[in-house]
Image (cartoon, rainbow, N blue to C red; front, side, top):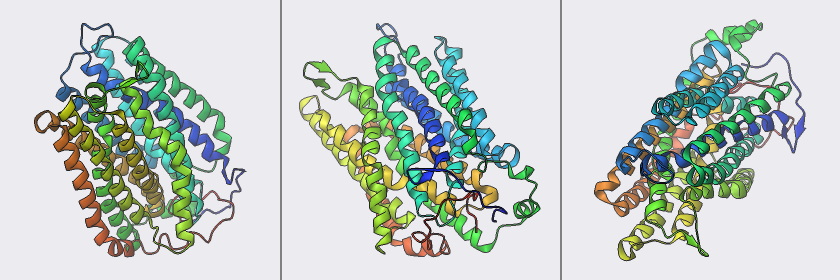
Length: 461
């Protein structure tokens, strides 16, 4: 499918201005989500009679809810993507998702159990509407084959992590020190700011995220009705296989908000020059490293591609999984030190988050971009939704692994995760070339197109 008209876009720092509108929208959405995530498990396990009372749950129960909640947040991306493709378009779906998120975070500020579960439910629905569709809109800003697409997604990804970094520090501190529900409410304010910014920036998004079903272009309508071609089917197969990497990656990575969060709280010596570092602050390390390393990693892969070296999306994702898995060996060392001395040093967590971040930069923004390259246009948002659903299953897996630490111990769980990730990534690497043949050259022209990104929807051919 191709656009009947070419739309020239204003640019800033070599990318469409619309990218920065979506950047700040996602930044504030992630501020709200990661802020709440930073304190959720800590709130659940906090004693009911403490000065900052929580719910007094066991670690296992808290991690079970955490895994289920984070799974549903991303699984709801499937209906969110479907609604966008069939009824609303991505642009309106992002708006409605933002409204649901503001309502959900605001209700969490109420200190009642009905408000707690209602707020979580609204957040699940809101993220499901917003998350897959805003990512799809980023892909729509770039012409097929434009080498800037991966770099654009990395810039967008940095926006995600600016929000995550600020929220872990600000919401985490407010929640742990001044009250959990104040933290939840502060997260809602962040989402409201993001929503306002999104509405104001609509003039830069006129050509992306529109509902194709309402298009007056007969050629576009007919292309939505046609069955998938053999090439499109092959590409969908590759996407689904790559989703296995996604499940394993997030099953390991999301220990950050669960088991690693509790480990930082209970087993880590957090004293720094006479002051105890809040446990929730360690989650800001990942976002901080992404902010500092994001463009460098993206530039490394872009230069590697221009030099003719292996730098396909699938290759990046496999390497990312292996690097992230290696980071868990530092957590094994931390657990070993704790078992010997009764406390572990903070630098083990810092090193683990560093490796996790480099791995994440190789797999997560690349996976988002990969979908916009391979997904058939009429299933663009739905495929993005499936990707986030796979992320959700990984989150649930993370919760299950975290729960198992109560019986197996942290050392066994951390070491097991590290070994499995490295072995699984190596196994997929063996079949990489065969899988890449099924993409039918979707990435072959990258590096030859530098002209201004035009208003093409994703997976234009």
